[in-house]
Image 1 (cartoon, helix red, strand yellow):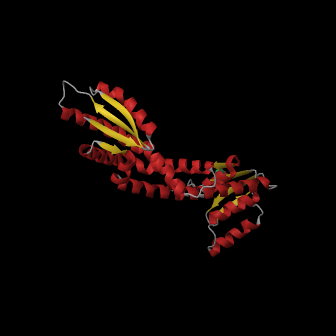
Image 2: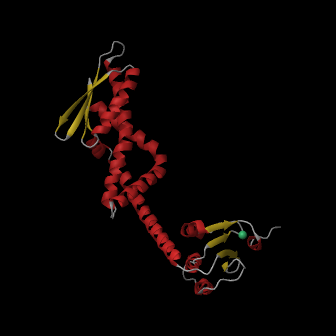
Image 3: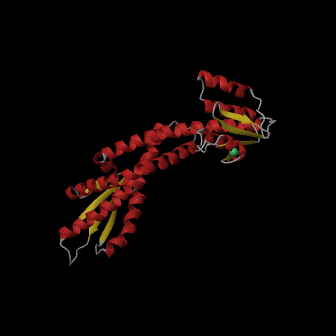
Length: 292
Ligand SMILES: [Zn+2]
């Protein structure tokens, strides 16, 4: 009574998992001997069940299947998934360096955990039931073949999720590069402004003023109203552009009515420790919603 597990790419993982599970099996009263052998590029682990006085052979085989199903499902969802994701990212993503590839893989990995976490349980139970079905019919399995032919739907879902995550990574990378470009630009500017305050203005959107409440002098700022009127570029983008051109030592974003505009995050990224938010001051008060 035995089950033969073969693998080409996950030899170390299968071996160490089987070894670490041995103790647990012994405690459950299942004594298993694992014999390793080689066939071509495949390594096989023959899990042989010892005889027991207590349980029937059918019962012991059921227990062996149960234990193997748990080990293999875990292995598929961690080590195998990790290398499948890596392979897919390598295929889809046009990386520029090993470091770039690493960053992309890490991003994709993180990204997959979140949307899949709800599906994680579903994935695992589906994989477990397929494993059990298979082991009840055959006493020999090659891990990679099983994934490829018996878990087609799971692999397809994984591929789609990786494609989406790589797209997200590209958007994120472009954004980061853009921010870095703006930061370099700001650092290279000679600024005449110590502080520029971004004050919400009910009529015009935002006013840019210096610490003495004087309107800051910038071609872009003059253009703001014009662009707003003609419905050109996104208004908040223009506020950001103006601030980049002005390159003040400090940007203070007044939240006024309490809602945080989308550009707040972008400004925080670009200006980093030069960026500050104010929730309450005289400038904010001017724009507080009228109560009563
Ligand atoms: Zn304020």
